[in-house]
Amino acid sequence: DGQPVTATDVAFSWKFLRDKGRPNHRYYYDQVKTLTIPNNRTVTFTFKPSPPDRELPLIIGLMPILPKHIYHERDIQAASLNLPIGSGPYEITEVTPGAQVRFEKRADYWADNLPHNRGRHNFALILEDYYRDEATAFEAFKAGDLDIWFESNPQRWTTGYNFPAANDGRIVKENIALGTPSGLRAFVMNTRRPLLANRALRKAMDLTFDFQWINKILYGDVYRRTGSYFGNTELSASDKPMSDGEAKLLSRSLIPRAELELGYKAPESDGTGRDRTKRLEAMQLLEEAGFEMLGKSLVSPNGQKVKLEILVQRRSDERLALSWRRMLAGIGIDLKVRLIDSSQYQRRLQNFDFDLIAYNYYASLSPGNEQIYYWGSEAADTPGSRNYAGIKDFAVDTAATALTRAESKENFVTAARALDRALMSGHYFIPLYHNPVQWVARWHYVEHPSRHSAYGARLDTWWMNHDN
Image (cartoon, rainbow, N blue to C red):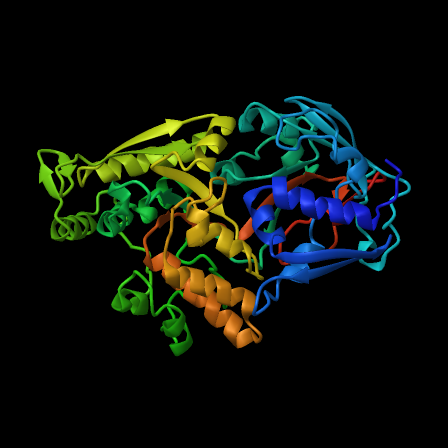
């Protein structure tokens, strides 16, 4: 809005987000012991932890700076259509609820000429349009109402671009290589639920998931099975022996040492969708844990029929979950698949009110404090955190903390692998799949640099060629 960013705004933002922000804001910003303002352009933070958290200065440096003169009178926890005021290159000039957000580049952006911004923020106007469903949005892209399309549907990517604009080159399809970890797209099991607190049941459910059949029938064999949170990087523990450093960090884990040493390996089926060998293996695990089959139903050791519900918010996830439902029925598990709208889905997630969900955990090349927010024991009891599985394992806490305190690359890699090993060996998730490339389609007049970042398409480096 033209007013300068001052040290007072920084101090206000820190206190405001510490007291009223999201759980991750409150956790990180509460690690500050004192804040002082020597002058109007300088803020000094002194941190609490001992030994110090080496990532905290970076986290504080990434803190959003909110203008005090605007937000000291606003309730950020209340729904509102008041336009947000920030300090970035674009100004939100208009919001049409449920339809569009309009961003306009500010000619007086204060950081426009800084070296790290050279070649960035090239669009003078950005419109983000909202559609009721993905199919309608794609039709808008085909008609030229949208300029860029990030594809997530494998069948459409392989067979759905047979239309004039794509055939004559006006629309360009690109596979953009990714250098980032696979992350963990998974069915997450809520271990706060008594049935899912049983590790044998969770492991048996993983055995029934026939990825080979699903990938072939639903997705045309375009995906890779995810076997590690940090897959495709040196941070992954997959197919690696457990080092002495990992063993030390995981010495107090709830997971048996032998299983940690073995590590997680995603089950491989015969691809028929009805693999009897995997089904028998799952039933043997369950019988050893005290489960039994009564008729066509699996019954827990306390006599309860195993009935579960999975929440999804997209049709594609519903289709996937329904395929898994049929597989689970083979071992007597009754899975109800429930498709709900995004607002209800987020509300249920925030309160951990579910048995299972479909969720995508993003992983970076520089994991740190957010891992405690994702997997830490304290986060398991904090509504709004992302520890949806309810993981409470001292070894996971230890490994996640070690990430933030590592003073060498060797120690950092060891901590990451220990965390990965504990997460995957705990069978808190049914790992799904990932795509090693990014699918992007664009109209020919939208151009980008010849090289992409490890993180794939970065639209702030793209531009519009009006001569093309």
